[in-house]
Length: 323
Ligand code: AVI
Image (cartoon, rainbow, N blue to C red; front, side, top):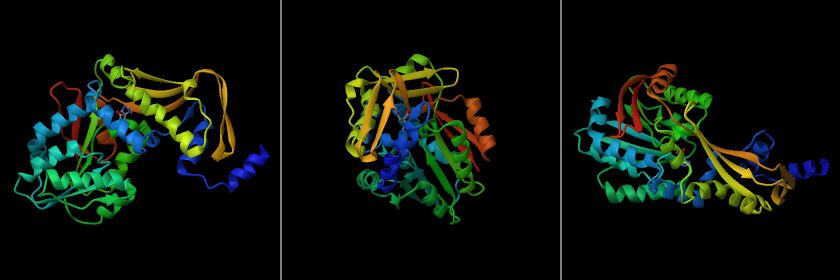
């Protein structure tokens, strides 16, 4: 063991390597869901968004497509403003909102912020094509830092945090994140957040455990990453995927399951990691909310609710708050 420790201190570990070591030393073992999104994982996530069972994308698309003008009016901007988006993804839904904003008389600038330069380049190419009149300046980097830079100017701002991304944060992190947004917004600025709502548990269960196994592949990709990036000697047939929705807490929790007792060597970490039979690796939280919880969150973090925008099924809400 001491030998391994010496070796590890000499190894220049990637962020992924460090977090796998840290997460696998806990009980239950865990890996942050942020590691889903390498190139392959991002591609699988696009397939998830296209699945009929993953209702979230269509619901939010419908809201932004049908209610873009009402959202603009509710923002009550009276001078040139700015729309900032955190984690823009492929930008398809946002394009719908921006399309409505462009039909209004007020001019604005769009600033998508993303850590991945690839995602930003793809988004820029799409925006140039679909909204040639849009003025935008993309920001690549840690979105907390970029947000802070943007907060130094006096331009009225609408901050977008769409797609139920908030559902991937645990309760304490949600509060910290929203407080951070509040501290980087000026009085009168707005925040539009996408929350997936509690609904028939069967509907939610299917969205996170689809019959074609796309969500399963999304999770198993973490094993691919460990094999490729950490030299892990994994036999994937010895792992399963399990996801569970608790309608009371509103939490979907996803896991990889070691279906037998096994000892896996991670070459690049110079470390063996053991797994018990049926031991879980917690991979993701996708939390579902009700309106009462959403309104409480706004009040706790320095915001005032302006209006909730729902899809026609009432499955999803884009909630507009004012600082
Ligand atoms: C990115 N995020 C909002 C998705 C969600 O619904 O939690 C990620 C996802 N995980 C499984 N399916 C989709």
